Image 1: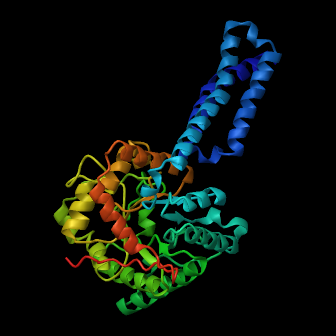
Image 2: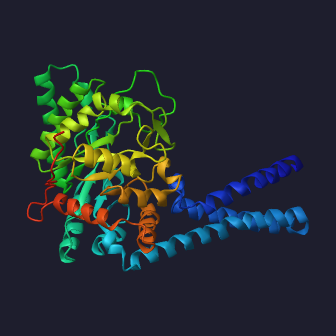
Image 3: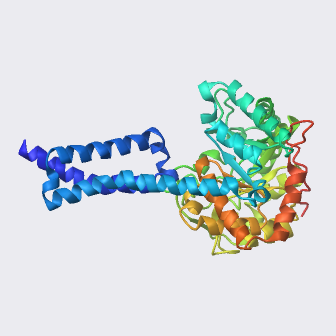
Length: 444
């Protein structure tokens, strides 16, 4: 029994710093699973351990006092972290400058009253919906929520929200079920070209019809990254681009993706081409790590970028820029917040004047680095929409970064004005509710 007690004390000494670390980082996206009930359980457990230590008299020794103090820390640190979050949230919700920036943010949400307030105050320009928004596993609640959000916008005299979902087909179908589970576009590569186009357009129509029925007007698909070599990438934990990419042949990718986009647009749902400048060649998963794309621009123009330019030239698609660093153009920052990439290549060289959005800013490649620097640089670089999808609570941190940039005069007014023009042209029509993402495509 004495040995067990000693082992228990040793475990408490090791567990206390872990609990304190979890408490002080309670708002970190990696600890999302601990939110709510998990946080309550952590505080309750730490207080219970303190009570047991005091009851057993451990406070009498110096080591015992230190252990009791260590187990008091989780509650104190969690309270401090929560207070910091609430103060930042209060600042965002009450900032007079906030509405000027709101159109540039798209947010995922779990609390409808909270996102309704953001929509009413003009602090967001779009919402991202996924499986956890299907309360009860049915689409009816989500359909009603989206309609209610659009009603709120109309009542506030604001443009309709862009409502985005992530229905690629295959392993990425975040609303399927209950929506139809469509096969990956990669499954069409073995068909004849005419059959590829017919089937891809059918897949697009299925997605478009079902998403439009929900009130979703922008699909974060298709994937235009070229398929990487067949060897397993042990550093790709969540992107899994080998299973999501259509093909390694740019012409095949262009053919299938163009047909899919036509199917989507026929239903009034816009497409989003991703993840420029391409993640098929990189080894690291940008959900967690920074990643470099070291391929020369000339080679990318002749291969990886052909599908992007081809589909953009024949559609009204938006373009998602990923978090890989295009080292030949801008070795110091990811493409998603690089002016040299967004303005220099996409806007100036390709003459694309449509909507450009970032990949999720909660991904590790951005969030674990200087996210505030990235937010300001993205806006100044010509990005129109900043996506906060996986963990909607991070919206307040990301928005506060833009707010601080505005207050310090670090946001480019000309870039903001140009972006506002693109977004106004790209928002859905109030009459149709469809994502008529009207934009001039590249012809270069």
